[in-house]
Image 1 (tube, rainbow, N blue to C red):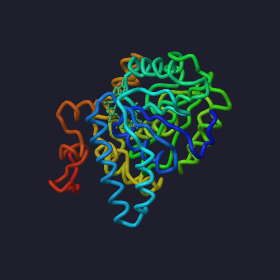
Image 2: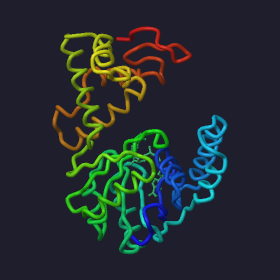
Image 3: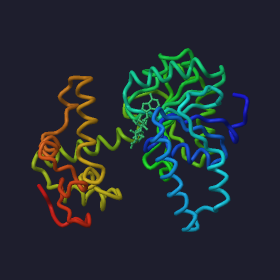
Image 4: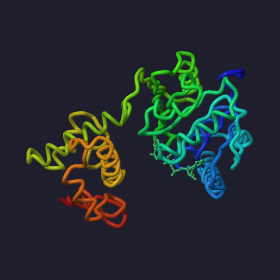
Length: 296
Ligand SMILES: NC(=O)c1ccc[n+]([C@@H]2O[C@H](COP(=O)([O-])OP(=O)(O)OC[C@H]3O[C@@H](n4cnc5c(N)ncnc54)[C@H](O)[C@@H]3O)[C@@H](O)[C@H]2O)c1
């Protein structure tokens, strides 16, 4: 990589929920960013949504209009894959074969110094790096949603990621104002989601074993452990179906019953009780989204 880590050329691939915000964070930090997506309407709508968000931050005095305008001047969109960049951050659809094809294509276009990074939540670096000729310059940069707000970025090293690549990835994450959490060895789920899932699994086991009710378990998590939200409250907020599908995906891969969704979560998903978004999950919500009682 020839350019300094303070002024790089970065391509963010995928203009969805994650890619659009990663592109904005990167442009705000002074980098020249190309946001790439196959779908031109996604590019248009995501830039319009970013503009709305940034305008509201300017109105609240959190950013200056000059900083925001300068960032948008550094942010361009395209439906044509480009290789003239120092860093590629991939945030396209979570399908391994599509990601592997993307990395094979972009690898062929990029110069030898370019670092390739994936924001994938479930695929480890080696599963994608093997589709390229540069596994030493491949790393996962796992941002959290919403990427404009959340400070943690997991920097996941694959077995062939070089020390230089890991060091550049860490320097980039710090430069854009985030906090890098380095995984020296890859493992599915990385750190944060593994911790989250372990707490969630234990909460469900305690409830299903009849040891304590959902409110009691949530109260313990909040008042004894200092969590901002209990595990059942959080599942209702993010959507009960999200955790269900993640577990089903893992179960399909391993066939291990321990990886399958719990009976309670499966029953809620079958009934369509998906949490706040449907007004009913572990708890009941009124039309304003306020919690009004227990649902199970
Ligand atoms: N949503 C989250 O909370 C979250 C959090 C962390 C990481 N991630 C990861 O980020 C990635 C993207 O997730 P998302 O929620 O932003 O997805 P999304 O569905 O909102 O957006 C995906 C975008 O990728 C585009 N796309 C699909 N195939 C493409 C291709 N071959 N080339 C170019 N563009 C293509 C789509 O048009 C779409 O705009 C996934 O790998 C996911 O695991 C998501």
